[in-house]
Image (cartoon, rainbow, N blue to C red):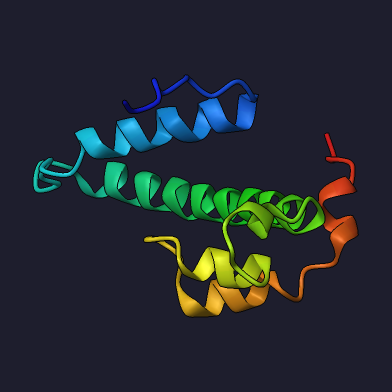
Length: 110
């Protein structure tokens, strides 16, 4: 018998789930009808979005390291656990091992 999946409780986990769902809907969407202005604006916003996701990923990775998410998996470190994730790249996984634990405790600027 498999466990019933529960929706994410934390605001970040919920946002990630929504973003993934939105991106999945765009997989087959063509960009040919975007005019130059819309293309420029969209590309600029995507670049900003990518930077925001990278920052959020580093905060969550710092927290993952601080709470040792790998303990229940048999992995020897958070970086090793992350490298086993289907979407993690080797460079990002190894970067996680160098994240200071205090990174996840840093207050957000307004």
